[in-house]
Image (cartoon, rainbow, N blue to C red; front, side, top):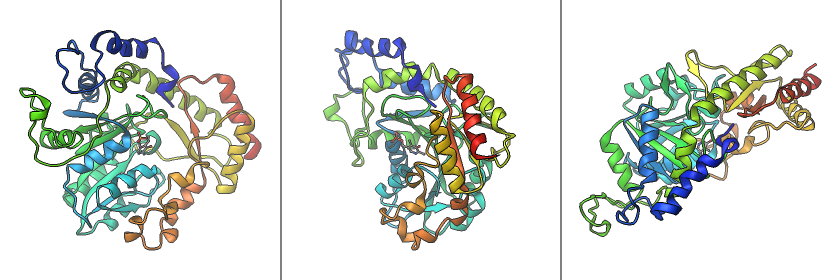
Amino acid sequence: MPGYELIDNKEFLEISDIFKKSKTLFRMGFEKQRKGIFKVNKFEEKFTFKLKSNYGLAVSSGTAALRVALSTLNLKEGDEVITQSFTFVATVEAIVESRAVPVCTEVDETLNMDPDDLVKKISKKTKAVIVVHMLGVPARLDKIKKICKKYNLVLIEDTAWGCGAKYKNKFLGTWGDMGAFSFDFAKTITTGEGGMVLFKSKKKFEAAKAWHDHGHENNPKVPRWEDTRKSSGFNFRMTEMQAAVGLAQLKKLDFIVKKQRENHDKIWNKIKDIPGITKRLYPAHSKISADALIFFVKNRKEAIKCRESLIKEGISTKILPEAYTWHFAKEWTHIKNLRKKHRNLKKSFNRSETLIKKSVSLPIFVKTSNKKIIKIEKALKKVLK
Ligand SMILES: *Cc1c(COP(=O)(O)O)cnc(C)c1O
């Protein structure tokens, strides 16, 4: 799972740089006082370089990253944005907050967007697609990218769970026009709260940078209050303290992902021969971030039994089965706009429901003892005789 396991003196030293030297908590301005220390700028630069992207904009959360990405599309009331039915509620919230109508697709055995269903959901009003790499497994990116190109749709990747993962040797979050990342406390690397948007186009990056800062065009030659603006915006800025933590965490990303993959494989090798378990499908040429290991059992009843048995051994599950209602669009009757296209929400996404309901998701940690892995095996064997 996460960077939070590895918080140590490195994060502390980055933060103390601010309190000892720059004494500046704001990302912009204060040039004289800050003694050349720009943590947010540096975090954006290093993150963008690491993932081999063109432009990066740090923001206050992963949800903000999605909202800021959507701000570059100038969406009008009634425009549609398609995402997948299995995601965190934040993806749909960002679409609603952008005045667009959210439309969701079924997921397939990868538990990510089903490209065939995507084609069916495209209408004249569709402007963009947000594909989600749920819990660190790449979506079928080449197919989805082709579809977006054919229909002239902007592709945004919700890479909240995919930081450090690759598809066909290219980092997730750099396949689409934009990639949105989350650094909340449960994600692969963390800044407490925080996010990042990666951009291919300079124009979109500049528009987003202004929009996330009330429209400020940030001309370094004039004081901030003399900045020009072309549009209104909002405030989704990252603070210097978040970025300081991010700089230290970013240096740990390779290690985190490497360890998680190792532990993922160790766990899978222990449980793969238990009858009645099938692993979620990973598209060929995937290099997962291994935030979780999801497998299918017979039905929801059995999935819940697995969780109970795991808990008895002191092992948790992650999202499935316990947080199902926060991660499946069928359950979001409280989001009125979602019912604009899915009039009978409770009767939608039946194929996805079958898959999600029989899923068990194990969290993967950087630090996992062999003892724990044996306990996982024991707990699952009890249920799946
Ligand atoms: C965590 C998450 C987000 C939102 O990120 P926050 O930083 O918590 O706002 C968005 N989408 C998905 C799929 C997530 O898991």
